[in-house]
Length: 182
Length: 187
Image (cartoon, rainbow over all chains, first blue to last red):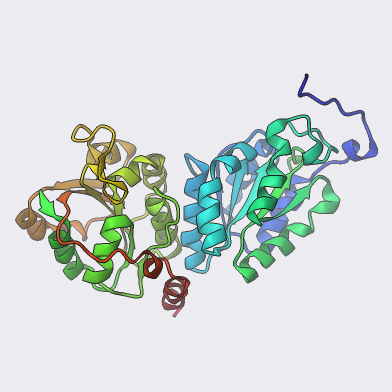
């Protein structure tokens, strides 16, 4: 059985996800440090622009769970940060998130590219096994998550980040398609 | 080889007020040797001490951050050597308590026991300075100067277990301890 699902063009797939608006929303939420492992989903629309943004400090990490620790250390100093990674890295970091973010109730914010998710298709309906399991795993861990599929979804970014820091809990913002470079 | 508790007692005399991130056996010794609100034990997942320490060092560049890592722990997060070196926090002092074993999990040997050079790996990754100590007198003589160097600095301590400290996991990882740490830093 093929695991690839072809999506017919719809109004939803014709939409775009503006990278500039996402970066502005991240900054509006008080994020000043981004820890990243490159992901082709966010490479052009987010990571390259962030790397050129003097208002953001970019820390390139070797592995995603490193960034969970860095984020916790910054949070202890009262500083907000965000991980920019791929869903494969999220899956690799589950133990760190389990302990640091969930059991210790430390605010860790993640923006996660869903590699090869079909635009306009719900993650749980994706033809990609690795994409389909992401939201159920986050639900099982009790981690809040939001899907950014179009520009209309971007306003949730600062609200979700503020709530994560107010409640001292993790939050995952899932990139349902490649953001467009500003 | 140095006994870990003897070595940490010497270290504690030089860092009475600094932020200290400590893991496993070193953490249990350290909390007895230097009880302090700026002890940070909430590392959570094995290997992440250096990463938590990096976050603290970047968040508070005005304070020295001391990481008491384990050798098995650092092997789980070797990439952090590259990340720390690239970020180059001047206030970051990374101690590796090298006992050659996973002491808290049955004292099984680490891979490459006795063959690895943690100082060598840190040096090649780009740490500003690295040191190795296996003799307590030598450590006592030099540690003040080492802590005056510009970070990131890695200090490999060749250790054996000393006197057994209480293994109070619940107390070490208590939420109250984390809250007190944040409040002390904010204050």
